[in-house]
Amino acid sequence: MLDQKRILVTGGAGFIGSHLCKRLVDAGHDVLCVDNFYTGRRQNLYELLSNPRFELARHDVCFSLYVEVDEIYNLACPASPIHYQFDPVQTTKTSVHGAINMLGLAKRIKAKILQASTSEVYGDPIVHPQTEEYWGNVNPIGPRSCYDEGKRCAETLFFDYRRQHNLGIKVARIFNTYGPRMHPHDGRGVSNFIVQALQNQNITIYGDGSQTRSFCYVDDLVEGLIRLMGTPDHVTGPINLGNPNEFTIKQLATSVIELTNSSSQIEYKPLPTDDPKQRQPDIQKAVELLDWNPTVQLREGLKQTITYFDRLLRDEHSPAA
Ligand SMILES: NC(=O)c1ccc[n+]([C@@H]2O[C@H](COP(=O)([O-])OP(=O)(O)OC[C@H]3O[C@@H](n4cnc5c(N)ncnc54)[C@H](O)[C@@H]3O)[C@@H](O)[C@H]2O)c1
Image (cartoon, rainbow, N blue to C red):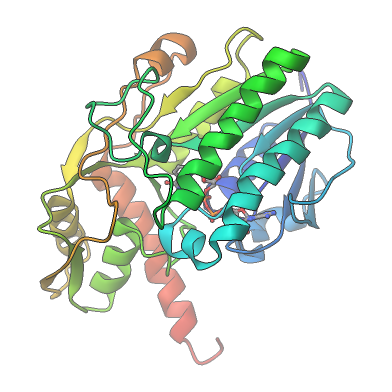
């Protein structure tokens, strides 16, 4: 195997992190996953736990970490509104102190470091689709601010470490991602709709369902993160990673009902505060610099995700559970 590395993944027991750990181990790298299990779960890593190339440690990134690795993927942070708003002070701490600690570590051991940033840094955008040059339209004092501003501050720290210490940094702005191992109760569109449809419950749409989203399948996203980490030193990002195909929330709900053969009906509820009306990535930079393009179509990705949730719900309801 060429170029075997030691790689740290923070937040590796979460949805995206667990897929990333698996891909890196499968590629022959040694992977250290650290997670405080705030939203992540050991079950997400079952396949890897017995692999000698994989190590799992319980650790909160708000505290210093001393390990020797070649690369760091910093994913630790709750990502869904329900989870990041539950303890908003902790969310900001995780983003900001977590970034400071991981950047400090990267500087000490001269590792490359990638930050899982987010399309939320664009807030409720008035530019559409969003390019990386757009500075965003973010409410600094609302209920989503702990996440949005925490992630914006983390980006600032990454670029200051670059300017001040010439650190090898990569910043990925991740747009809506979905797939197996999403948290079943994270309140996000895809997981909510699938869980409701599989149980033939009403599907809840907040607003009139005309707000649009773009959905990136997790395998495509992980491929983008790995490609970004592999770029030459001068490529720092920020780089948008997401699927530019836009769907309305109502279209998503209808597809889920159809693919699950569900008898669920759609129910409408008021839109929460600061919910962005439109979100679509401009991925020109990722196409040019990473030669990356999402390949998994929504229906295909939904089928994989439905299979996962179907199994999960059956296990939860089985007598042995
Ligand atoms: N899923 C998406 O659509 C999406 C979109 C944009 C950005 N992101 C970013 O990608 C990353 C991963 O998101 P995800 O969807 O896998 O979310 P997730 O909640 O499934 O995973 C986050 C992981 O971080 C861990 N964590 C939280 N606080 C921690 C702390 N203080 N110390 C150590 N571990 C901690 C959690 O236990 C969990 O395992 C996050 O940084 C998120 O902001 C995700």
